[in-house]
Image 1 (cartoon, rainbow, N blue to C red):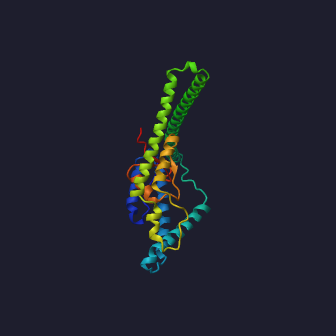
Image 2 (cartoon, rainbow, N blue to C red; image 1 turned 45 degrees about the vertical axis):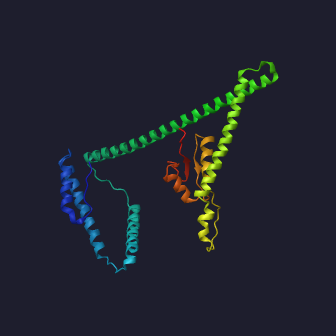
Image 3 (cartoon, one colour; image 1 turned 90 degrees about the vertical axis):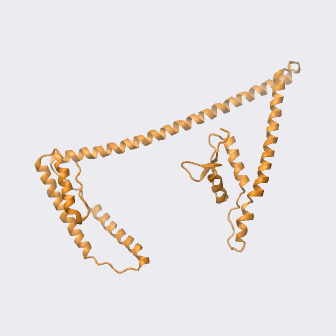
Length: 286
């Protein structure tokens, strides 16, 4: 059972009516209700005394610019006094009636139960996320393991064919074709990066040529040299391809904020859901 009384003195009648309504709905005996009403009346008297003391404290005429600061200072002082009073106060028993204590105990236990359920839900959600991360890590590990085993097999077959030239077969030609494809892909990658660099140099000049040129007359010099948009994209691409299970890079002072905003606004990059100082490239290949 919880008895709620309004904190404003101007609504005392409404608060007492609310208290009476709530008390009348309980199944406790008449003595418990009367005892709680007496305690409410005593608390109201104390609140009226405190309100009268506050009304006796004069208020100074304040300038508009200092009014907010002064109000905050008064609130801070009042909270400090309240804190010291509560710290020095000894805990008091609300009531000695066993029925009242039983109802209050049930209510407190229900609050504790609700809090524990919320904590349990949060822990379960975190465990589920950790399980998903673990599955991704295991999948990446298995892929790397299979790739390593395939490379080892190919090396063993190549060494066997070198030792026995007469046993050359279709696998040798397939290996050579695979190597040629890898070389072609590397060449194509260099061409793409070169074309990307020319495009970015033309449409997105380095920050030193754009932003810093406006501050030539400024005495402050940049502490960290800003990197180009091409370098940022290369870092994102390399991180995504080399460590797909952890594709995030850390944003530091060398990253020009307009470039970061450009990548995030147009969906080319995504921030880390828990760390805003980290971001990753959008996985377009998936």
